[in-house]
Image (cartoon, rainbow, N blue to C red; front, side, top):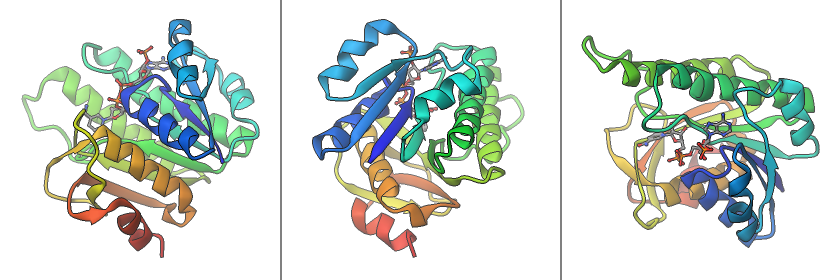
Length: 219
Ligand SMILES: NC(=O)c1ccc[n+]([C@@H]2O[C@H](COP(=O)([O-])OP(=O)(O)OC[C@H]3O[C@@H](n4cnc5c(N)ncnc54)[C@H](OP(=O)(O)O)[C@@H]3O)[C@@H](O)[C@H]2O)c1
């Protein structure tokens, strides 16, 4: 399987690329900083340098040609302001989905976030509100497209080692956290099970093995 990952030098993305390349799949990391090429290649992935805030859908589609699936794992990240929540967390996802359609790559897994469908409470920090709005708008855009999409909404991300044990279900799950390594493992399992398409899923640490949790949803 050839999988293109947007935000390819991100923490989840690097773990995902490692899982894919270790088992013989091809991973292509879309990164914006040429200094990140070596890190990506070191784990056996291909790198393609593209800035998802300035590229056209056609530019990105050219990089997706021949792929079996795409994963959106980019994010403006902590420290960014409201403008980049819109241009990256929403805009780059919309661009990737548009490009996937143009390139004929139907399978699309979007890393979203738990609770983004709940409007922020009055008085919520402006940047956090912009983040929630951007993530939900990206989801809504994807759900409206004729693609085989799965929206994955992890809870709070940690850098703890993966446990392989998760709770994965149609929202809402009780709030919780999950290691990025387990998000990467779930993403691989979702890619392996295209019958999970059309689902929006909450993900936190739990007591079900990843393969079993995903198989249960792929009915
Ligand atoms: N933090 C949480 O608790 C939490 C919870 C649920 C969901 N999430 C979501 O999980 C996802 C991934 O998380 P993570 O921790 O793996 O993210 P991360 O380490 O912050 O990685 C995000 C990546 O996106 C890239 N990016 C930013 N702007 C870009 C652009 N214009 N073009 C191309 N790439 C760009 C960044 O590249 P640069 O290094 O060049 O900036 C970075 O490599 C994010 O979408 C986040 O919203 C987070």
